[in-house]
Length: 127
Image (cartoon, rainbow, N blue to C red; front, side):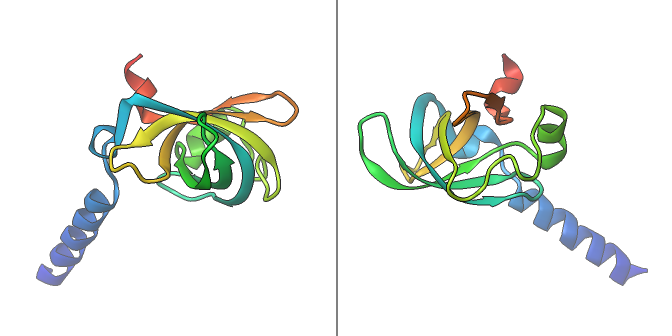
């Protein structure tokens, strides 16, 4: 019985450590608009990640990793597992990482056909 409790406690601690609050990693006052090409989409819990080669609003090019909401919530908002594919041209609006890295928490994704999808940013939960 003690070993089962220890295993449950270990997984609970790992899950809590792996998941973070928006405020811990991103700055709601530092918005970013990225225009670029999708290189990869990680469709997994607790958040999807959109990887892209993009230019920011200042024209600076780089590789970016943008966090989105969880897959279940995004599917309810109109996303599909194949909504983004490598090579797709997109525009992401989001919130920059506090550490200044090329990481953002996505607020919206605009597809090449003009469709705009909410990306599930946890910053928008309070609005």
